[in-house]
Length: 277
Image (cartoon, rainbow, N blue to C red; front, side, top):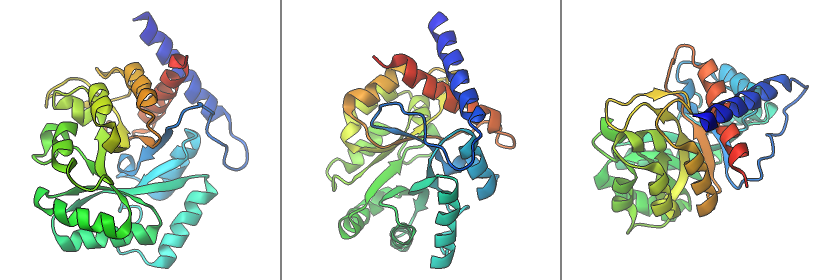
């Protein structure tokens, strides 16, 4: 309990420090000395426009965003894509991936890959039907993109956890892997720390969140308040040399999520700092 209180205090300090740095222009993220980066999943802001999203990222000193299509539609023109990136750049934010994008036909897969190409990213977070995986394999070879399948826990029949994704992609092109959503993995009765260790060669993106339990009844809450062992997870990120983005996907209080977002980012940063040897 004492250790958890210390981590909470460290996280709160990190968040308050980020808010206090209200200087002109974008500021660099605090140096953690880690290979992995801290980002935000666009889905967190499904009830808010891009301006509010970028304002929140700026206040939390977060500089990486996984782009959702409600902020940049799949049918966006080249001019709209350019304006979108200019808006991100003004806030010191990089769009590092697109998705999650659900794909139920070869036409939807074609559209998603062409969209990612026009957006200028080389990582797609996707959810294809199982029978479409051979076609995804073909497109990955054609475009030379990484494709991270987002797992969804017990709520959706396809891809409930990291083991299921692994079993479906292990014999496909090595650029096809997973977005390890540690909350959903936990809710399907799995250990995300063990799964990161076991499947790290196919982990191309990470969604961080906390949950109240290890079954379907578990629900999302602020990072540090649930059952996930974040110190162990951060240490495993270091051990396997993960060099992608850990993006917060906050799913609590969706009409007013901003305090929870700040607490979660602050706690995660606090864990990084207090577990560094």
